[in-house]
Amino acid sequence: MDGLESKFQSLMARLAQSPLYREKLTAEQFAGASLSQLRELPLTTKDDLRRAGTFGHLAVERKRIAQYHESTGTTGEPSASWFTAEDMVAGGQQLAACGVKLNADDLVLIRFPYALALPAFLMQQAAWQCGAGVVPASGRTVVTSYPRVLELLERLRVTVIAGLPREMELLAETARLLGAQPSAAYPSLRAICVAGELMGESRRRHIERLWGVPVFNMYGSTETGNIAVMCEFGSMHVSQEDFIVESLIEDGSAPAPAGERGFAAITTLSHQGSPLLRYFNGDILTLEPPGCPCGRHTAKLKHYGRGRDRIRIGAIVLDGYDLQEAVYTIAPAPDAWLAIELEHGLQIVLDSHASDQWEADVLERTLSSKLRVPVTVTISSDARLMDRDALVLNVPSTKPVYIQKRQREEGSL
Image (cartoon, rainbow, N blue to C red; front, side, top):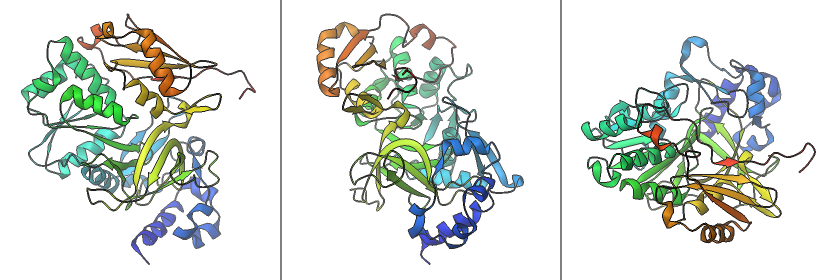
């Protein structure tokens, strides 16, 4: 039995301890399923997890649990996730494979929230496993305001920042408001690691310009742990020893055509606490075969956003990635933005400290051309998208919103 097949059989044995899967799978499926038959097994949906409740997919005794995490529940009841000590170590190893190459000389400032969300704890594990030190500067708390985080970066000579992409943008804007240029003010900083939000290439390059250091992306979820990390050449590589990632058509019934965008189904091969089989998480992605100058022999993943944010206007289908790529090619790139779906097009609200360099009609033509739908542009002149006064005060950050979907009447498409 090869390594992946052995891991799959171990997963099936663990799933037999999960109330969710004892109800979802038959005895024949538990006893006879092989890795080659994965696609014959049922999908696990977010609704399945919510119906199962907090303990519904716990697959080990409670005494083995080291940490509990749950999603923010923005669109419904939060999804529970249980982690053993072994799960946390494995998660750290997954992040340590990132192209940032953490080492014992690094001091990593972690800006991810430390409350229930998972990334801060996995990043902490990765830093410790590489011998690096950690500065736990959690986001969304009054304890570590934006000015205080900037002061810590300078005083402690931090070498790596880890957090949401939005936090990197807000920290850079705070530095500007305080009279500093981020790309010059923190000479010890050598890299930024981000996760928790969609980040396309244009946004990554924008953050790299703001800070003057390379930016490395990571992809995962609270329910699964981290699935893929970016190498030094900018490719996102799947941790194939721990995950099977499928790309399926929208209803999940068949694989997406090669090279086309599909919906993710994630199988957690090694997770102990709350393992998942073919978790249909609503994310849109493509998978490419192995082949990268970094030498990793694993599939490459590209994330396009969440299905719930997909916008259809006539025959045009726009994912979060498409909107983000268009917005971040504006010069100068906005400090904040919001795309609002209209019946026959989009309204895009933009905010920038350099908005006097923009012309709304030029932006409308540019964005309409890139997105292939009519776009109206509103240039914000108030605190609707960014409250700059709050940035320099002791005000905690909040979850950002980038896409506002149109409310449809019941029964409409």
